[in-house]
Amino acid sequence: MIKNYINKIIASQKFTPTFLGMFFNPFWFARRNLFYSIKLHGKKLSGKILDIGCGSKPYKNYLNGSYVGLEVADKNANNKNLDSEILSFDGKDFPFESNSIDSILCTQVLEHVENPPLFFSEIKRILKKDGLLLLTVPFVWAEHDIPNDFNRFTIFGLKKLLMENKFDVIEYKKIGNNFSIIGQLINSYLYDILPNKIKYNIITHIFLYGFFNLSFYLLSKILPKNDNLYLDNVILAQFKKN
Image (tube, rainbow, N blue to C red; front, side):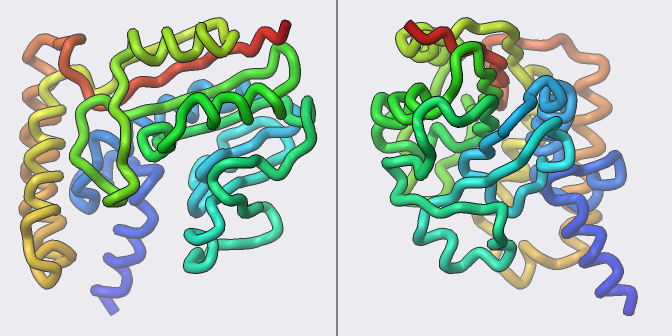
């Protein structure tokens, strides 16, 4: 009974963690920063909104428009959350007409894109003039979704990529740019090396991941930030068609 209750808490704290999630989520720093950033900027997206690489749609309720998700076909086959709001595609051609999308959310996806120029050509094709793109991309992070992990971008690389594709950067931010990054990397390291029976244990979540989350959260409050070392980039950009 208690175990099931705690497992529900762990699941609820996966992508939209609260302060409580500090003791239940080994990726608390990264997911918390992303959630707050998407919650802040998501309401600026409006009209028909496409969530590229939507997964289980954790950010749907923080967007301000008509929602549709997009996932690659092979992932959809195993996606228990697949429903009428999620469309599948081959990873190359988006199943939308040209100039049919008002806003795009693309969070933690670009690192998995094997051909970024082709990816952006499709974004430009479907996005309306002055449409918004809310983009989040990791900078310091372990390889994941192996072997489909191809890219890491600095903020300068992202700005260049967006400019080359006729996007104006409206706002950008480096998140996880304080001492919390060290705690996050420790927990990520432990999560990767621990055997499953320990990795997913409730005791491990609370007293191991939770310990490092709390310790480095407190340290991050007293130690200076470092804008050269950070977890993720967040960019809000506007598309300027020819």
